[in-house]
Image 1 (tube, helix red, strand yellow):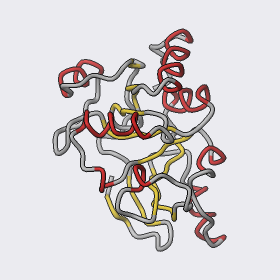
Image 2 (image 1 turned 180 degrees about the vertical axis):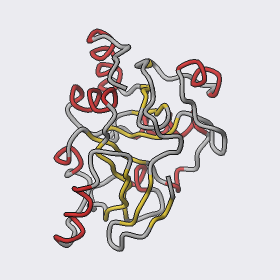
Image 3 (image 1 turned 90 degrees about the vertical axis):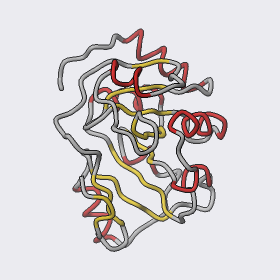
Image 4 (image 1 turned 120 degrees about the vertical axis):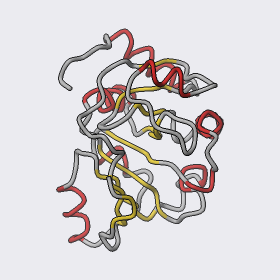
Length: 190
C-alpha cells in the first residue's frame, strides 16, 4: 500500500475536480471510493446517480484528520470520544450526531453522519490536498460488488467519475466497520 501510482499532477487535478463540483475515484482501505465536495449538493446528487443509491441512506464522509470532520459533527461524552479517536486512522466508520448545519444530502434520513479518518495514503493525501473532508462511498452501483481496481471501477459504473487516482486498495476485503458512536454498537461488520 505504500507504493504510489499517482503523481502530484494527478493529485492536483483531482483537487481541482473536487473544487469545481466534480467526482473523483480513489482507492481506500478496502475498495475504490467515489468522492466529492460534501457541501456541494449537485456533486453529491451526481455521486448518488452514479451509484443508483437512495439519498435517504446517507453517505460516509472521510478525512485525513479529525479537525476536517468538525464542521459536520457534534460533541460526544469524553469516553466515547476516546474510543473513536483510538480507532483512527483506520477502517472504522462512526455514526456521530450531525450538527444542525450538516446538509441532509449527507445524513439522509438520519440525525447522525457516518465519518472516518482514513488510513489509506491516497485517500488521506486527497483530503489533505483538498483541505477538507470529502464524501466517500464505494464505487459500484447499489447492491453490486464494489470495485477494487481502476479497471473494475470503469466496468462497474455506467456514469464515470471526472478523474481517478489510480492506486492499490488496502488489504481489507470488506468495507469499513460502522459503529454507533453513542453506544459502540456495530451497525455494519467489516
